[in-house]
Length: 246
Image (cartoon, rainbow, N blue to C red; front, top):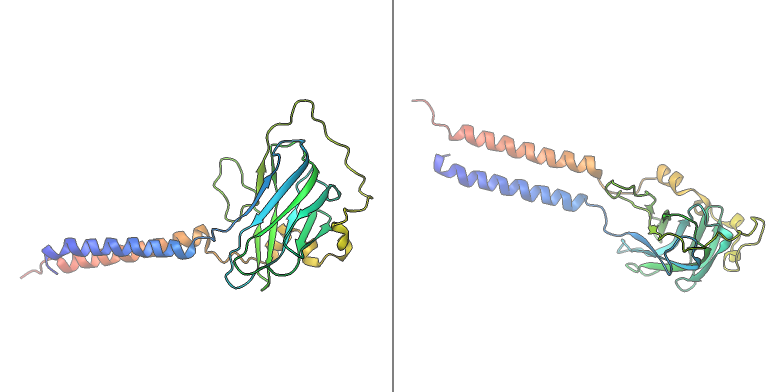
């Protein structure tokens, strides 16, 4: 290779590195889908609040069949009732939250449901760990609680930020644990919940990892390998371009 052709070779090498890195990132990037929560009144100690949950579909071949929500401390299951959900879906109470589910939604259709909460706790934010089950058995786990000052985790749990409580607001005495669940919850009692519905999301996540992504370490390793190959090729081309001794 001549000296005059070296710059063009270097440019080609740079283009290859950039293209390869972009391809790796595109393949390894986590799904853009998220689970989200919003409130009619996002304020600590607010009463009769409607919480709306939306799970974004990330499968082109299967639809949602159920959504499992773990309620944060301060929201008891027996103070919650189902307000809206996809047609045919019912709420099933659990010890630490509830499951809402029914006939499978069409692939690509987001699952949205809302509940009425008697009162929000006195907190600055609430995390709702979420498990989403598809008709093909796949489960998406949005259970990692974001921490202040840190990057968003790969599978963030829906978080609701709350304004400070209104002046004079006080906690309502919660019903005794022995009280019957709301009518919507009684369609299927907690004792009849499936093992998966009653399983802790953290336990479920530990027992089955269906993330499907390479993770930050894997991505860095692949990009590093691509760069090493490119550097090796560059050094080889430099060696070939050196004039041989006569």
